Length: 398
Image 1 (cartoon, rainbow, N blue to C red):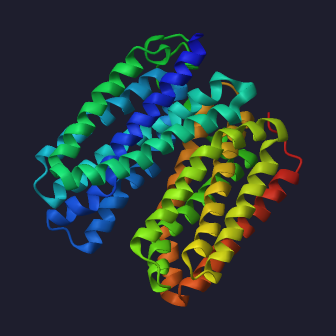
Image 2: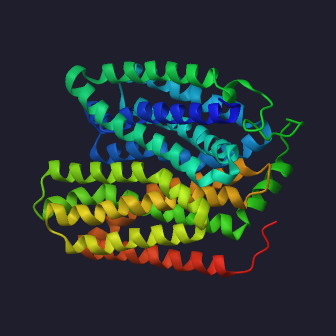
């Protein structure tokens, strides 16, 4: 097994285990644990969002630093937080302690996610879409299994059992990454593009960052992923409530989300392979059109099967977008700045995911569920029109 392929397999395993551990605590445990500590509903919402806010603040700096200090150092920092943070929940007895710990725990994904994505994108440039598709599918599989497994553990053994299992998973993550080429080889091509001078220079870092931020197509692609995540956050927050208002049960709504997640996981590698062959832009446009169509169709549904169809369409469209946007950002980035690009990309993802429930909540409060879903579909189409304009423009990218 070649060193790049071993690194890729190890990163897929680490991504799966890291998000298995992370989401085992995040849902459904976190709201229940916060309520157990006496948190008000408003505080519960803030606690759930705290780790995403960390990502908004840190993903971009983490990506920039990885270009300067090397990928390996930053990934180790993220993995250390993944491994240690779960043990901190044993010490939490008050709401303010949980809030602080959630901000700290969010550093794990904020540091590791954009840097690992930069490494995956760099391993096999000719199959970038497919490899990112496999990696994101493994990561999402960990998320789904973590949420299901966390619920079972809470029912069987309570909160401490979940914290203990997540701590054990953290030890396994350290072992897997430590024995992989990505974790051991200081000078491996796929592990780092750091400069020989590791001293941090803010003017140099700022110059590299400005280059990324001013690249219209990198920004446009990142914004498209942010828009898709905004819609995803809105769907996660308000599809359950809408489903209950039209007569669905909680079990049926859960089943819709389960099928949607499975479809997204299974199709990501294939959609990534198609983006390698057909090009990134057509896939991004097609995927966002599917997401917009799904939101436009949802208000017309009142039965389980009817509602499942657009929800699954949204999951499929999201898989198409996710497997193409990050690969496109990597394609557009010059060597040595990939971490910065993925930091910008990750920042917009988190901004979108955090703003989705908030925007949808305001729309639902003002207009009701059905008009709110149609407005979100319109926002996706407006964003898509902007992306099309940027793509058609003749922009020098080098």
